[in-house]
Image 1 (cartoon, rainbow, N blue to C red):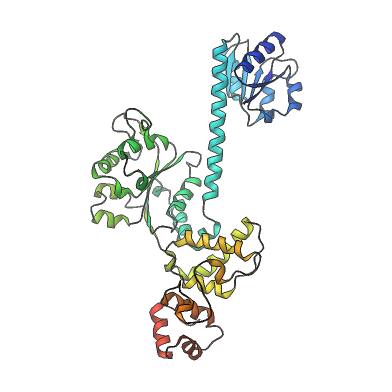
Image 2: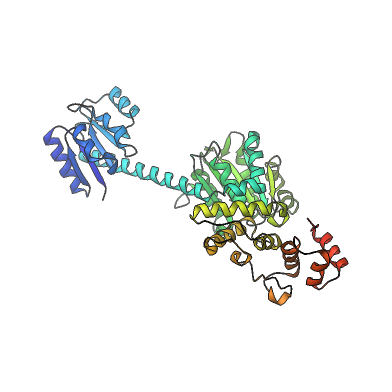
Length: 431
């Protein structure tokens, strides 16, 4: 039940208002002045109805004390000037006496609805901020590099194409561009085409004539960012319509003529040029992104940054969960560098978070990462969740600081020459 605070000095009107609103299932607290209302903590209500002319302070005086709770101003001195002054002071709405009961209820309902939408938008923005990658991901991976490029080169901000394997952080980058861009207060809409491919995509994107899809995702994203996942799932006719709609001044709806101001980002597993060469994207659509297409490398191609990234993520998650964790054991660093990371940055992030919780304040070891059973025994049967290459990398990185090349080769059951050849092949020079 919504709680309303009424400030009205005329007893008859105050009593009538209280009775009317209570009959319509509102919880009402009546007061006769701003001074009487202030001790009741206006911020604890859902809406404040205040007369403009009151004994003592004006009704608009309650507005800064009630924020962010909306305030509706009532007055028998209806004029354009008083309406403008009330709205400038921060009132959400204005109603002139004498007012019809239905009119008042409509104003109350509309004001509560607007306030609820504001609260939902605030909550969504806070949740979006929570979903952004940790600072570690920005400082130690290509996500940060590409973000800086896009942030500093504003002419690339209109349309962006981001490619890379699953888990490399494509949507993280898209969220960063929205959250820190000029459209951060606007909507962030993801057209998840793999989920929608069995539905009428044109209606979903452009809107239909009636029903739930009447407005479409273009309208939902107006003033903000629209992310299209896996654009190759769009048929060529729909791709052509998108090309016709896109221009420097916005997206022109082909049926209504309306212009949508949208930052368009496309996210794909496959690079842009490959999609065009395979005729999965029409050439005209590909040309829209020719100056702003980026490929995020998989984590296994960024081994030189893994040590720094692991330590930064441990620090991030230990603070987040309020867990004291000492420096990682060398076995953990070696295991991370040996592992293939098919799930890329997102898999590593989850593994480090799990390890921080599993270590319970101790130094994180390889076993805490959940990557498989890793021991110091080079026999493959004792390390059954790692491939031979992965275990070779792990064993060498784990022991090369304390074992000579001869000792490493002996423990691995190979010749010293075979050890050297395998090091060269895998890019593992002795450090």
